[in-house]
Image 1: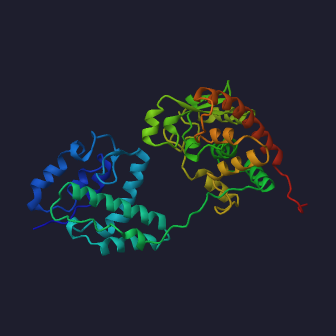
Image 2: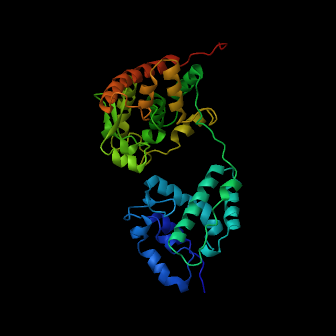
Image 3: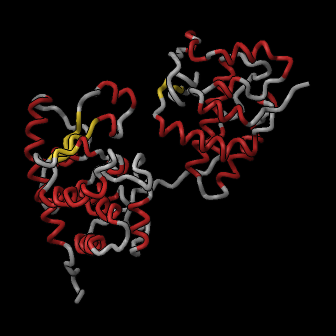
Length: 366
């Protein structure tokens, strides 16, 4: 008699390198030989283009589920989606018995909480698992029931990150940050976030070892930036230079005695971990700034707009500071040097400008 899929299998699927648990996904007792083959080490099935096993959730592919490397953070996200949105409705079913209607019903549950983009991502995960089952010749799996469901799902609304583009309004936010009554570490992060306009995750994961306070530069390793795993491997050892203005240096010097026992500039409650990803946004909410008006990631759009339209800096310098690719018109080495000089000046002018607009009243305000 076939046994229903054990829920621990999904957990193992994500935590043991990707697929050990899925190898047993809803396979009955009479198929133990196939189970053993499928469970041995699917990462070594060379015909499927699958490489050697990596660490926690480290390999994955669209059709073979194991050719693209996962970052640890992405693996945690996939595991969370599996546990929350896939296991409850589908975990007790045999994989060969799961129908398109079963999958659609599971996705409607996700849509019912207005998580339309997540529903599309969940559908992708389920579809990839069935693709892997098909190419691995799992008995009784003859089709992918998730195929074609995109057109039945509600399309997520494309929404830009909330950002303030009006200088007087942005100045009021900066003034509020200066008077923030919460924890000192979060306050420092909020003050540096608009000043440096790096990605929120890059700021949270900043390490003291990468800060050269004396030279006024943050040498952000490319491994800690938002690049694909392949791009990170290609640029291993390189850094994204973030010039530190006098104001930024002063904030870091003030913060250093409080957090220098941790490797992280902004540690969480445990010194070995970084502060929560929601810390800056939550702090702004407590000050009365809602998520429709501003978010941590929106500081990048604010800086890009004001640096170009108000302070007249070149788009190339701005894009380079944002960590985006800039055309190498005169060669990579030349551009890196030229942009760094211009970016260093730009970051100081930007910090000075932020000081200037604090408390500036808009037209008609008294």
